[in-house]
Length: 187
Image (cartoon, rainbow, N blue to C red; front, side):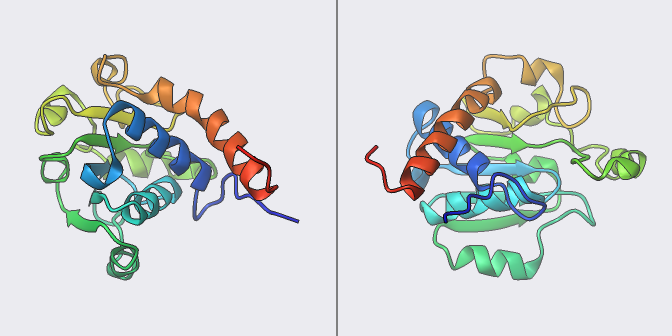
């Protein structure tokens, strides 16, 4: 019986599939893209990094101390293809990126850490000034739910550069496609 990981603490592969569909549709082939992840190296970051690397793209990972990708994880990702770079500031993370991606600072099950996480992630908000450091025409992505004023400002989330709503629509497409594939049905 096929088992599909819809979401776990370690990974979120169907979200990554929806993200890849969205990027290819709105920005271009993954192997030509630099994708920046700003924030916690969590389940979404891990699955997105795996997908981008498997497809030959470049991941730029940045998060505050205690929330960064480990050296072992960078080695593992690098073996998948593509490239991975780690950055200590949000500005360095997004510089030159085609796509800037983030997630909520406090994921499900971490609610007791909310105040500490707000302190740790101070300065890591994706806002218009940070987006201006990415490539001209760069797009913004967020897997939602979103907390405007924390991980992203409203002027980015609700702007024409945001692909977050399109990502949400592609989650259903990704899930349907994955289920058909594991069941061996024709696309």
